[in-house]
Image (cartoon, rainbow, N blue to C red; front, side):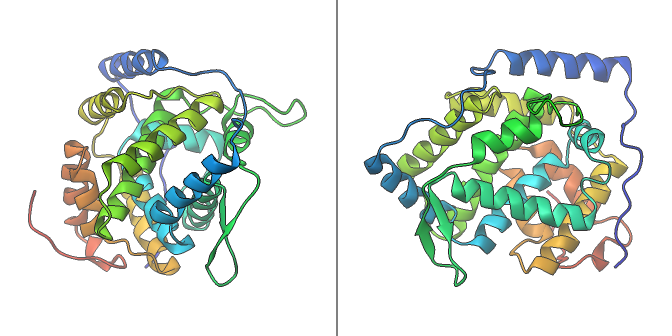
Length: 286
């Protein structure tokens, strides 16, 4: 299948949409954080517990990449978030770059839990956590004076994407028969802290994050050629990588917290020509 081409990096916006965007940005600005602090000090006992969490929720490179693919599916439902990424890197979600993004983001996440994998896929301890630095360098306004300036990823986009990374990790665990509320809470709070220490805003109160994402789903999610192109590329890349990703799994994930995104994704799947995407499956209307 030919790669889906991404159209204009700036989706059309009317005054009402801009007003909604600004209101949501203001909502994100009220979350805790916003100052770069770097990685926290972690004792050996805590590192061992974090490795246990990482092995359970980010249990192999392929599983971790599958988690990230589902998180990207949520991101692609919001044209403004896709546009932010394109302003930083044109073609950011074309197939080759998207594959690298999935691989790199997945490795940053499992490494955040003081964990790595050897060539055979076995977990091994890690003694350095790069996530706060990576987010600061890649997404800060201009943390390296000699680097060319890039637009900073907004607190709203980062909060939405990070929360759906956390949700996707839980979704993947539940599909494997793991449904541990205490484990999920530890995972959530640890990543929330790392995101804040990276200079972004994210709340320890899960209900606040859920409310913010529900508002994004209600006010910004809509059908757009950008999202369709990104979803098609995601299905193609996932098949090429051998990930356990299908329209059905993405639909089930989105239905968990983003009803508008799930509805628009279902419409996208039924569009003429959608069934030539790898891993395509037919499923009933929502």
